[in-house]
Image (cartoon, rainbow, N blue to C red; front, side, top):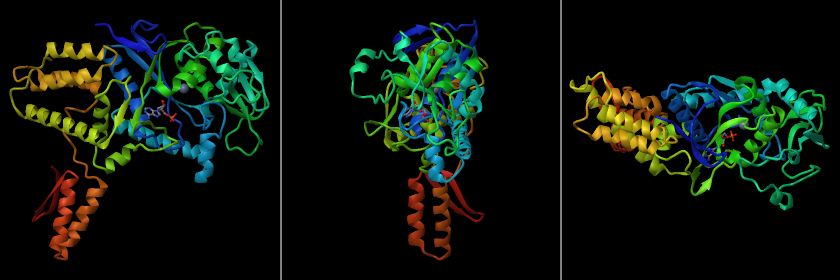
Length: 460
Ligand code: AMP
Ligand code: ZN
């Protein structure tokens, strides 16, 4: 069965054919590690994980590379504002490197919690300064760069395909008022290397043939992807916000430096998670982190399930109510599976071909996860179907919901605190308070039973 993917470049579904027969190279734009990633950011990585799992399911050998932006991403995605890392380091009174490692560590913990497979290669921008300088030198030699008072810029007028990914009307932009031009030649030109305003003041700066400074944000992805995947590779992913600037600029500098017409064959973009009708960014705030959801007694896999209820190309509106219904659905699925596992007549070694084929049709149709989940539900409800457990095992290779794993009961800190308070109230014979606390614990989805051996907490 062929796999179809929607290519932003060309805006249509295409049959996936990798450059090398059964091997696939994927590059995913990773996090800027100056703060926690919110569940919106994580939706993008769940999408990339599903893509990777579908490719592996289809027996491709996948090499997945993800960068860690720890320098050069300014507060505006274009080239103005402060460096997000330097700003955070100053605010927290720490070394930029320590900030980067701290938030990157949390990000990796989130990956584990969400059952996202880690990339084969993690690459940090600050550890690839040499490669970035080499790439800028290559562009300079080919005549694509020029110098301004604040850095070395890419001259977008020299790349005739500029804006092809975003379908940008470059002429329109030339006349527009939206973008500050400074002493750039064209509004769409972007920084490859920025000079330090006061050398010695920034924490992160390096010597270069053009002066002391730091790389622009876009160049890191071209330099590191080519180092680990070659000068042409199969799939590039990221959030939809990257289409007009970041990915557009990555294409310009890479296609010019490597002299390739199609630097990347397939561009896939994940649509945003919205909150109260707005696109939410990390800098504006507004969306929870995974730890905050856990404090509210949601499991990270409830959130993963929630993400699978929408296609990755449609925006998804986040509310706690919709997360509740995802949590309930996942619990129901797990309960049905537990009773299947307990019953002795579910011991078929062969998966159910009919349902598996239907599932494969859905996932291979541009990762249609809502339909894939519907097939799972249909299988669970079909009393006559055989091979259910084997089929679910296969489906879960893609869904990644740990469907066959026995639930470990993790008691959230909030519940633990209430349990302790209740114990104290009981010791003091304050039964009214003890009952109130029991109600609160029940509302959070936990039961409490008093026995001779002490108190036992279980999930409702
Ligand atoms: P950042 O750390 O800000 O560079 O963002 C990390 C990733 O999250 C990028 O691929 C963004 O496109 C993506 N992203 C940011 N906000 C959202 C959102 N609300 N929904 C989905 N993806 C997002
Ligand atoms: Zn990137």
